[in-house]
Amino acid sequence: MITAPVSRRVSNLLLAASCAVLSACGGVGYPLEHYEAVYSKAALETPAPDPATLERQTPQQQVRIAHGRYLVQITGCAACHTDGALVGEPDPRRELAGSHLGIAYTNPMRGGFPGVAYPANLTPDPAMGLGNWTDAQIAAAIRTGSLNGEPGHLVVMSWPLYQRMTDDDVAAVVAYLRTIPAIANAVPPRVPPGTRAGTSYVYFGVFRSGPAITR
Ligand code: HEC
Image (cartoon, rainbow, N blue to C red; front, side, top):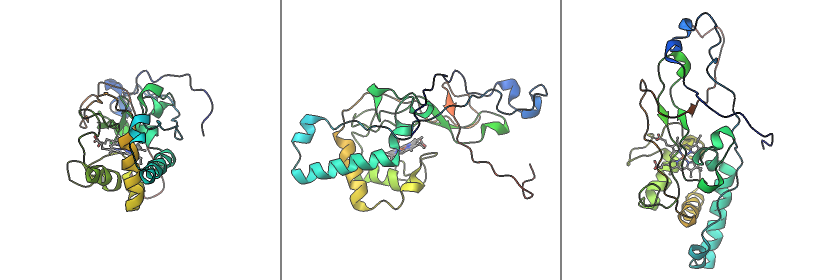
């Protein structure tokens, strides 16, 4: 768990337009000049179920909800889906209610503006969260990255890690998400590559080097 306080804020993670091509960066040669290091909060507390909603459930369903909460905690959903968590400053009033800080899904260091996706609002809010999604739709999003019925459409979201979640476990996650307080919080729509995002964003990159890499 990350315990060190993170005081630096992300002011602007965008590559400046003049630096869109790395060789145009005035010979500085350091491709991360317009970036700063931030530390996400991976292991976060999860919001407690709404007591009134919980009370209406059968004892068996309450056990399932508690299991779902545990799973959401250990799979790190809140590390992306809570405002500020990606940079180590989670907003406790917006747990699992989506992130205004985006995640680049194309490599911004190649030049040009990357595509940016925003972790969605997972609370039961009917307009801005999952209130109108069916259980099957939520389960498919978690295990197959399905958006609007088409698998593989959720970018960045770590659904490949969750592919083997059992039916019981995914049902428990869904049951838990249905009991947390609804928060009306709209996250920005996905920004396509080549368009300047109106928000800050982070980029997770794993970079490989070696003889086979030509560029
Ligand atoms: C690495 C960051 C990350 C993690 C961890 C993560 N998600 Fe996501 N999730 C996203 C992003 C980003 C989107 C929106 C993707 C897009 O628009 O392509 C998303 C979308 C979703 C959606 C679709 C909702 C909608 O309105 O589009 C659901 C449901 C979802 N996530 C549930 C979960 C659950 C449950 C977990 C934990 C088991 C989880 N996510 C973990 C980043 C993440």
